[in-house]
Length: 146
Length: 117
Length: 337
Image (cartoon, rainbow over all chains, first blue to last red; front, side, top):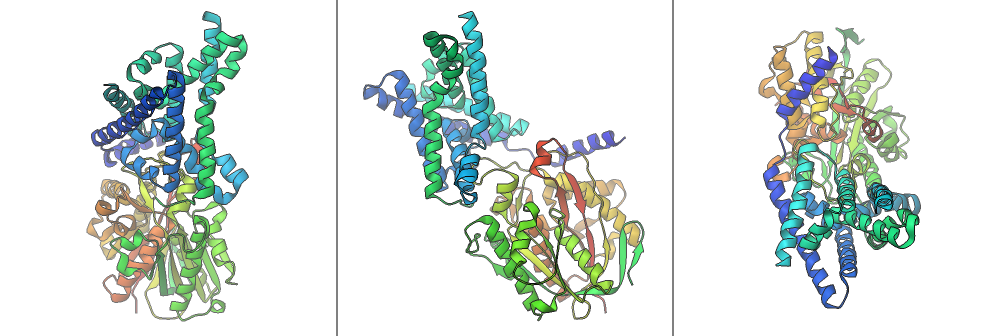
């Protein structure tokens, strides 16, 4: 009885709740995501032209984008970009950087050890944890089948 | 030409993320985790690297590219130092990105105060 | 003496008089449609402090002092302060009033806190336990986001169903004697949980509690909705308001245009990008202390059913998969001779 009531209400809520404007959201995500990747390509081509090999050029690109996004987060601009671009600024590596810098700045008032130090991994922690675990799983499989 | 490829492929990967956010109500933290793990698995299967070769930064800058890097690193380490590579490869490959992110975040926390939206 | 009527209501005999109110709001609220009704609009949402939490306490301190001053009283004339907020352990309120030297009841009703504070204040005054009580509630957008969601600078989009926490503090002075509209009755809500788990759709989580309370209130007092000039819920927003109307229609109760929601009134969703509306303890508190009280004083409203609504949850409970429970408290404020 109660379960049924809840399900009925859930349906009512779905009818009453406006959806996100998915087409416009996707268009903005596409544009901003594309632009960030294009900037990445510019940096990569520049590094290659300076004589870096492919792997190092790619690493330099990540580092430069990460630092740039971190500064923009500190200045309070990346959050505004995120509101506009949604996944367009979350999915590139700059979004990862934003997710590290934003809690670091937000929680500095609680001190540098348990404020900044602990909260810096609020979102990055899970990313690193599951990234490393999945890389280990890949490694185990690769070790036996290579 | 490589700029156009980077733009289009990078854009499409972001659109996939946007559809997930709008349709499934996943938080951005979950999107980050999901994309890195997916990239790592696709990288492990050898599916992602061709995309990186094709689109350059368009595939390496989005987070699946970061996952792919982890998978690539593990494989390289295993080839060089055997089973120990399973433990060291992921961290080694991602060290530059993670160090850059946390050190610059720390410096930002020294410089800036929290701001309103 | 007050009498308990029906199932959940009290009808007062010696009705507490709302002799003064004060409202202090943040910058965004000060740009909204209700701006002219607020006593103080902050120029800086940090209120001169160095953290959002300290700012919230400072806003509460300034606003409660202002309410006491507007009633022509001094701190020592006030028997009790009843106030609360959304921060852990009610720190927003406690640090705000710690230097006032006034006996304090800290209350938590999530965003329904103003209703709870006013109801308890009216009970105290009517029962002879106090001559003068200040009822108040506060919230701050930035401290609430930080505690309940993500850091402010994290680049995310808010869904269309999300609401915007109001920055501010609303306070009302309730006295046994004096001039002003009176609190003639209360209906205390029970927790209603319809299993909503989406933290970005609080209006939907609270709407069943509000609908239940309105139905109960009308039954307990034996009145029809048209007895009231205005029925105002706290912070249901556009989504929640439409759900309340739909649920009550199913029970044959039509509220019509007299039913407003403070969360809809306080922001202009077209220009202020607030999506479903305002929320937080301060949403209903400042709308009452500002617009609704001012209209009661002018006689534009003579009978008000004020229903602050709250979503009972914490980041821990949400993380553990608990649903968001709703609560609503009804307070009747009337101009009576």
